[in-house]
Length: 76
Length: 527
Image 1: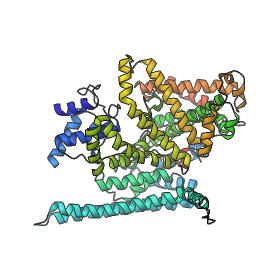
Image 2 (image 1 turned 90 degrees about the vertical axis):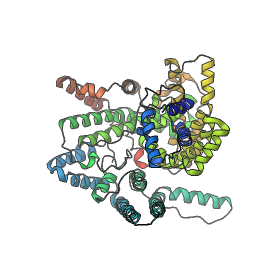
Image 3 (image 1 turned 90 degrees about the horizontal axis):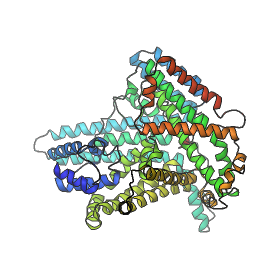
Image 4 (image 1 turned 120 degrees about the horizontal axis):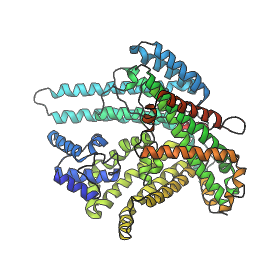
């Protein structure tokens, strides 16, 4: 999870990732940032995020993102 | 017919509400489906067959995909078989069906909506090369709401393919989803959900009725008091724009932007309110777009369901395609975390905005409208790191009210320019109007009576000023997460009804109808 927060801070350091639960709905992560985030996550955690999983619910908080990553790692 | 016509508000909707409540709960879908098809027939006549074809097509497509999934699972159960290979084989089969189905739907849309534009351009090219041959272009009348239900049908097909949703086995559910009468003309563009409140046959409760009517009155206020009142100015300026001074043209363009917002968001309130009466929750299409920080955010808050459709079915699939992903990785390593993804994202954004422009209409001005926003979004992203550095250097707090006010004015003007091209009859008209803003621009026109020659008098301007201020304050409260609707519903019954009746009376007394006014035709129903 720390690595994930590190990636997010690298993309936008002005957000309090520990407490923000509306990263997409609150416009902290826009579509282009999500592109970077997806490729960073895929590189770092060796998973492939299908477009079907790119929904606000999965990207709104660090916890939901982490849940998605662990789910994808299990599926691989 | 518009959703704000007397026929809809005082005849069709109340009649459906009464018949619906008489039906038994489990058969209420029949009432809604018959009502929706009858409504579609009233607005589009025999073109109802197009909707019927799309519905049956979606249904059969779903069954084929379902069968492939079942066959795949069956084959995977066999011994000594490479499961991955079987999955891949069936995925390819499904993909073929999906591609053909998408092509069929796009072909229908193209034939009805884009054929005259396409042939017109071919004819121009022929003429350019000196050929006498010209295609005959006949005027085609498209089914109302074709662009809306086609996008809904495509989202259903893609979602079934990706496994996001299961294929629907009850054709009536699909038929109702694609034809539901409050949203058939202007959206919002919904996604299929088999557990949607649309199929539940909810009772018409006092709360739903009050909330629905309340929202409809609010929408009527925006449309009848503000949008319809601005119509004469817009018609006047856009018809003879370049003969006016720059200030008047800008005033006309600003009026059009406000009119478009009030018309579309007001109609959306009536649509969502109508559905709410039946206990059906439709997706929201607006979220105070003018309070956005930039154009990109603006489009995430204006016509939300269209933007979300393009994001989910064009932007991400294009930018996250295997080749694009590897390009992103390479670009990221060479250009960094910001500019790398921006490069590949811009390719996907180009597709999105070209299609977004075309979706709004078959004309070069619409294509320009798309390209204009693409340009603003890319430029905004390109300069964002520098703007941040600059504001840090000069200690500008971008969260402060003064900076937010500057952002508001900047965004508003950028939107006004875009909408000017959107409203113009042709692209050259758009440029003519745009450049005439800079011709003889003088603020003297505010006081010298010029504005009184645009079809409105002092009384109209006062009503407009107060009404726009009311909408602004309500939007500001919503932006601050203050739920006015909930607060009103918590008021005691006397105060609540005094408020409801006051708003209704305000619409009745100050509505722009009768001699001297002309209600706007539903703008988005043509898309």
